[in-house]
Image 1: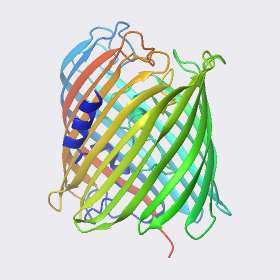
Image 2: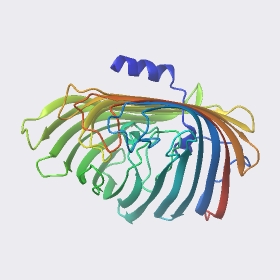
Image 3: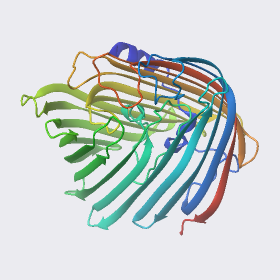
Image 4: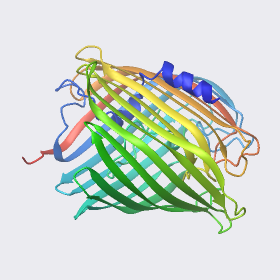
Length: 434
């Protein structure tokens, strides 16, 4: 399975998702086209909306037949017409050492052939980051969203503290929602001209919901980074994290020792390349079993700008994940890859693939496999209106002895083809002060 993941990633490393525009920060689109030209604002409020129609097919082997995807109790298989609609608001504020981001929205699917024709999901989130001086930064966030497997995949870009929840119509999610919040602080200080010390602490919590007990996690880490050449840094660090799923006896710990390299500089064959990778050892244990389990871990991220308007990215992660969306820890190999760029001044092409293979902490031989892929092309009618055509595929399989999140069947496979009209409306914008 690990070889299969590697083949998928290498063969499709030029890929990305239409619903992940917030991740493609290195992209430099033509100014004046749909949703572009707003890259340096101090404060903004933006509204988005989308409406589309197409064809979908699902195979949902869910014995409980409720709370997942189309939300229908009458069938576990569906094939036919489906319409979608979404609307949302996004706010951002970047002023000096403080930044705030907030978003809220809703998506819905309409199935004319089913008795329960509408499946709706809501998203909301707020995040903030504040520089306290002397190298200290504090951050906090809160969100409301449905259960999904999205957090199991590595992100293609490092998230910012003020990143917020963004709805994704093409990625399957449960009809059950949950509330989570987090807070933490980080510190960074130069010891010498070439050596930097950094440390951080974070706390994460999810409230209880249908079929899911509350979840709490906290962790601390430290790192020494040494600049050894132009664009090349070496680092070594240690991290400790602990998570509790419901009762006190379902407590898990993870000790992480990692060493790695940060590399970023201009190369002869591209305008800019950034490479980061790390390797290490993870020691995991639980309250039920005091002995630690040692495993090799690693992570890598590659970002490459291709020409003026194209961007390719690849991310890989191997390690133990404490997930707010899942009933227990998952140790996995996972990867994401993508590319996006402009074909002409008014047309943009995007692809994305993701793959995951792993097992739960209590069932080391239990398979957890997931794949997804998205391809799409969009055409700018004006700066505020565009049309798009999207194809999405998704599949996951969990062994029968794996405890699932609310509304998740052990096996699911689906695909959609959708044409849509999208509207982007900046309600308020204020340019950053020079």
